[in-house]
Length: 48
Image 1: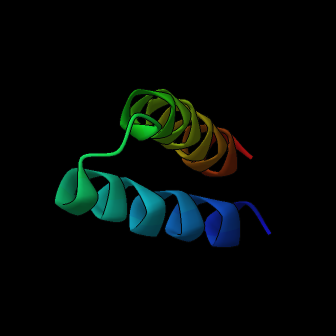
Image 2: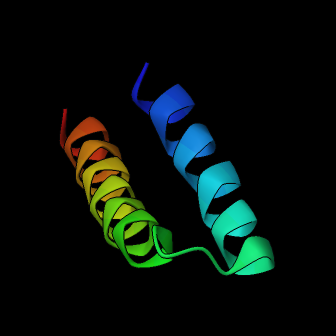
Protein backbone atom coordinates (compact mmCIF):
# COMPACT_ATOMS: atom_id res chain seq x y z
CA UNK A 1 0.00 0.00 0.00
CA UNK A 2 2.85 2.39 0.81
CA UNK A 3 4.32 1.86 -2.63
CA UNK A 4 0.97 2.79 -4.18
CA UNK A 5 0.88 6.02 -2.20
CA UNK A 6 4.44 6.80 -3.29
CA UNK A 7 3.56 6.23 -6.96
CA UNK A 8 0.48 8.47 -6.68
CA UNK A 9 2.58 11.20 -5.06
CA UNK A 10 5.19 10.97 -7.81
CA UNK A 11 2.49 11.32 -10.46
CA UNK A 12 0.98 14.31 -8.64
CA UNK A 13 4.45 15.81 -8.27
CA UNK A 14 5.08 15.51 -12.01
CA UNK A 15 1.68 17.06 -12.73
CA UNK A 16 2.54 19.89 -10.34
CA UNK A 17 5.80 20.52 -12.19
CA UNK A 18 4.07 20.52 -15.55
CA UNK A 19 1.10 22.68 -14.58
CA UNK A 20 2.92 24.93 -12.05
CA UNK A 21 -0.09 25.08 -9.76
CA UNK A 22 -0.03 26.59 -6.29
CA UNK A 23 -0.33 23.09 -4.81
CA UNK A 24 3.12 22.26 -6.18
CA UNK A 25 4.83 23.12 -2.89
CA UNK A 26 2.56 20.80 -0.92
CA UNK A 27 3.11 18.01 -3.41
CA UNK A 28 6.89 18.43 -3.10
CA UNK A 29 6.65 18.15 0.69
CA UNK A 30 4.45 15.05 0.44
CA UNK A 31 6.86 13.51 -2.06
CA UNK A 32 9.80 14.03 0.26
CA UNK A 33 7.85 12.48 3.15
CA UNK A 34 6.89 9.49 0.97
CA UNK A 35 10.50 8.95 -0.13
CA UNK A 36 11.73 9.07 3.48
CA UNK A 37 9.08 6.56 4.57
CA UNK A 38 9.90 4.20 1.70
CA UNK A 39 13.61 4.38 2.52
CA UNK A 40 12.93 3.65 6.18
CA UNK A 41 10.83 0.61 5.25
CA UNK A 42 13.56 -0.68 2.92
CA UNK A 43 16.17 -0.27 5.65
CA UNK A 44 13.96 -2.00 8.21
CA UNK A 45 13.23 -4.84 5.77
CA UNK A 46 16.97 -5.43 5.27
CA UNK A 47 17.55 -5.65 9.06
CA UNK A 48 14.81 -8.23 9.58
